[in-house]
Image (cartoon, rainbow, N blue to C red; front, side, top):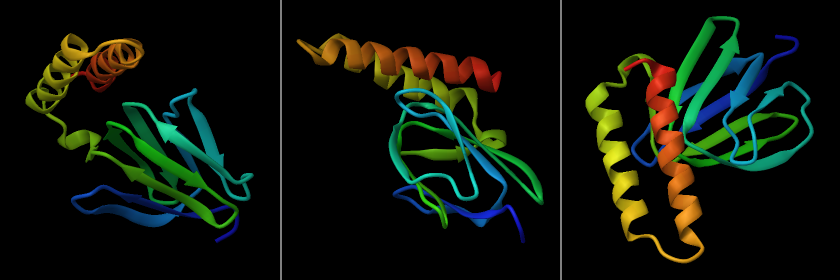
Length: 132
């Protein structure tokens, strides 16, 4: 199909998605961006956020906690630390992630304090974005 690309989303536990898409909105660590067919090759780290995929079969959203995205001319692959379909995310899931991020802030020192605080803020924003 014209103007589509292959999209793959995997986490350590399982493969969550593998299908043709028209675009992928990626929560990059240095800023959100959208990958489309024939996008210039790029590799980005992910921040906690919502990964949105649009394709011939509609829109799908996934909550991701971090990882990497590789965009190439043939498609986009996302290797997520954790990924959950947005409709399956519960308040308990996010509260556990936020608690872990709060603990990381408490134990952080030196240069890692800012990174831990940013992760905590991203987790809290993810909860708001998902409305749970």
